[in-house]
Length: 375
Ligand SMILES: Cc1cc2nc3c(=O)[nH]c(=O)nc-3n(C[C@H](O)[C@H](O)[C@H](O)COP(=O)(O)OP(=O)(O)OC[C@H]3O[C@@H](n4cnc5c(N)ncnc54)[C@H](O)[C@@H]3O)c2cc1C
Image (tube, rainbow, N blue to C red; front, side, top):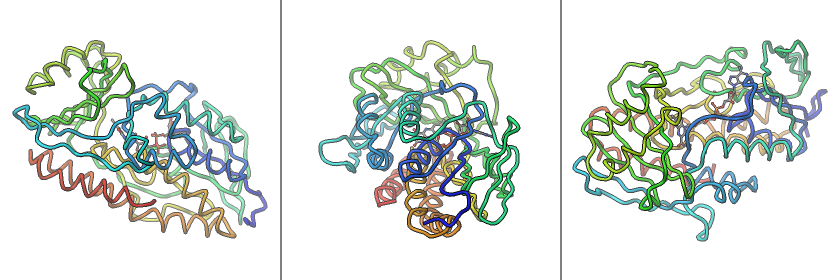
């Protein structure tokens, strides 16, 4: 058991996928958990997400996979379509949570957040919206956490789960570099075409597009624009610009293109990756999720890693006598798996740049095989 004067108390920075999962897992293991989430609103905006098999497996451990499958869209395969519009390859992914459940699921981000948020609160975690951490100081086994509302907490554990641009990471003096890879990714919500019962990836002459169902009625279109500067476009330009880029794709994309109608349902983000080469932990503080390891979205593995982090963190803290030893064990267990996934995703980005799409397939397979191994 932990030998902290603060008892089993934790402050988590960030109520994203990693923070909410860690909160649910820690609270389920008897920790008293608070989350400081800088966003004042619980209404997460944004596009859909593909929960790959390992993400579903980790959610199943928390008892949440069936909720996600009920509100999302279960799928078993990926169809790769060549530049000429012809199917090049169909991949069936392993069903990691049993033969009766699908291999993966598409889900709207706000739906996943609602499910995770409810799970964390049901287990007793308290989520504070519109709050952040402004200073952290450690004295022996106690972490003094200064919050933006002027209050202070003294806890046994601080978890930085505040995403790729983590400020908790900076407060702890754990520096990571963010790498931009000359790609902007697009996501657009569209009605699900009846034929879209799995993921489709369409190789273009310069870019890659695709479609992921996220419910019976909805799907998201994705597009990866290659060789472009990082930039922000006015919102009104998003939908017309995406439709224009999709004109370069033949076949089924011609059918999808007119479905991209309103710019409010379109987002465009830079492909950034990060991996913390040095320590992820300092004393009784640690960073998890994208704050420690952010892969490019090509492998659809970021959410799985974030959810696994929360589970493994609670597991290792339960196994060790002190928080510090639990965090060391957590990082030892997670580092190589996360590094390999980030590196694989970066290699895939490189091949997409070089328009060597087919050569990316074995890398994608290797990434899926790695992630199918237990966390
Ligand atoms: C365009 C795009 C598409 C993607 N598609 C997929 C996909 O299909 N499948 C997949 O598995 N992964 C995908 N990913 C990756 C996935 O979204 C991330 O890996 C995942 O969200 C990481 O979760 P996280 O909780 O670590 O970080 P986030 O989801 O970024 O959550 C961080 C949270 O911390 C909060 N926060 C930030 N700063 C502070 C602060 N100072 N104080 C308090 N709170 C703070 C934020 O508001 C947020 O709620 C995609 C990423 C992108 C960019």
